[in-house]
Image 1 (cartoon, helix red, strand yellow):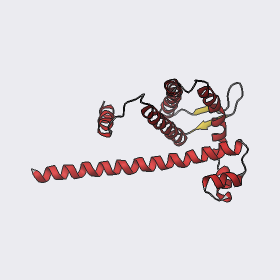
Image 2 (cartoon, one colour; image 1 turned 180 degrees about the horizontal axis):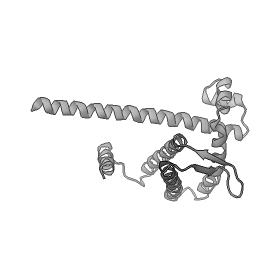
Image 3 (cartoon, one colour; image 1 turned 90 degrees about the horizontal axis):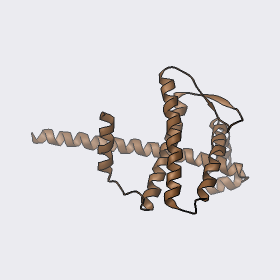
Image 4 (cartoon, one colour; image 1 turned 90 degrees about the vertical axis):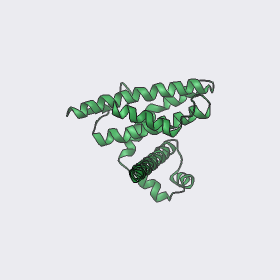
Length: 189
């Protein structure tokens, strides 16, 4: 009986280690994506490739390569859509509760779009998205991989939002075990 308990505990620990590795990998991918977003934003703001390279500790050649990535056009468009959100945040008189509430409202709205897109993809329908603010049009087809990449970005934003809320004592810190139990209940439901 004792060996059964040890084996169960060993498997539980193994699962936790695997989950930690998966989380670390996801966070690394998100950080790399965030760096590309920052590089694109810096370039749009007028910084030279040399200055961007110095700030990111990359070679100018690598910065140029990252700016040539096909996803960069998509990022530039999404950044232009997010700028009004960032500007309106600064108008909230540095009230952390209002800022977090507004960002949370925005992220939830974006998640609703993605849920709709995932439902369409599941039914075998195409997802066509206008990448420009109305009334301009630049429609592109989104596949599952692209939606998942964007969901990863939203997840990173929500993770940052949670950290900000906890840092400002707006949200209580939830122990990791409690969070895992809550997620486990959601998965089983």
